[in-house]
Image: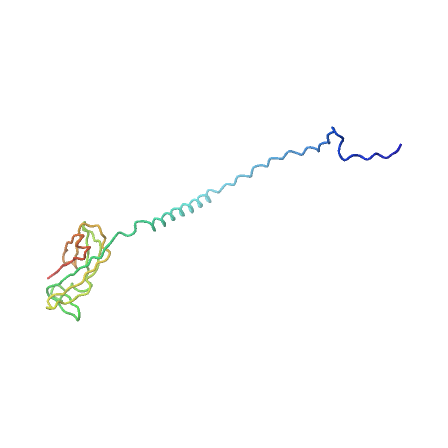
Length: 179
């Protein structure tokens, strides 16, 4: 007999099962991560910033796409002073001491709406003396008069009003006189 073992096969003989490997520990369940909470002060600050951003965004959109300025027109026409006229170079005005000294280039022109509220203001423009030298005609151009009134009243200085229909006002048909 011999002390040597015969060579051993690498695979088990047919019908024999290999020895199973020892069992692996089952996977452990990881503990859920701790919930992170936001401090109430931080939550309030975040809410405030988000709210302000939303409101600001909406305001910006409506400001750009909103109705815009109301439709307006320039009320054009003439104002004629027919008494106590003084010629000054190429222009004219009311004579001092005559009661018409307030009538000159730059005198206020006020436009009132149908409810009596002031809707626009302007001034008497350039003046021109008539060929006879007896009348002084001023240009009137009051800008940004809002459309939509049924009628308008126009006052030069404090001299009373002249009423115009909306159509007359928009068509530049102001023709007023004093004297």
